[in-house]
Image (cartoon, rainbow, N blue to C red; front, side, top):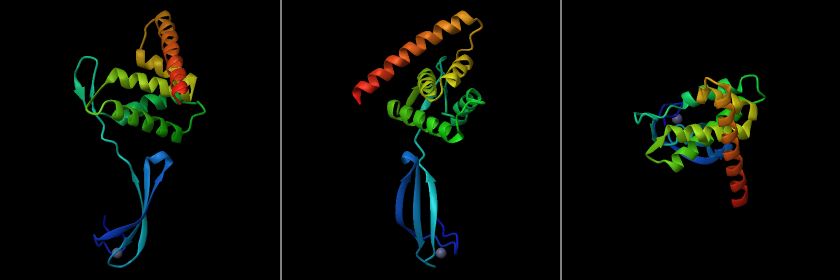
Amino acid sequence: MHCPSCNASNTKVIDSRHLSEGHMIRRRRECNSCLKRYTTYEKVQLEMPVIVKNDKRREPYNREKIQKGVNKACQKRPVTAAQINRLIDDIERHISESFPYEAPAKQIGEITMLKMYLLDPVAYVRFASFYWNFKDINGFVSSLQKSIGKMDEEIRNDQRSL
Ligand SMILES: [Zn+2]
């Protein structure tokens, strides 16, 4: 980390603080050369696993891909950009804890749907409609019912373990 004032490379951290549920770190630094103090905001970057698609092909994890789908589903819903960011941070934390090396794309779809359901049910239904891409309404409705039943059960189990 170079000093923004004199460009010296030896600076020391004098204070470190986690912000917004641990995803950001604010650091107060002091330059050892000119003694000026400044603050840096650093995003905690999780090590993400490789994604295994349904056809077994592997691809690097791509946050923008999830973000695009979530943004589209949340259009004109009372959901803020900060909430979407937190939702994706949550998904990433969950994936990297459960699947350190390789994560099935299907699991990511499922955890994303659960988080969307908790955030905004209408956005969840929209997200599910892009995700499943059903051609007929009956298939979509019965999948929706199954998915919601499963998620409600998971949510109940989570509450019990709290
Ligand atoms: Zn300096």
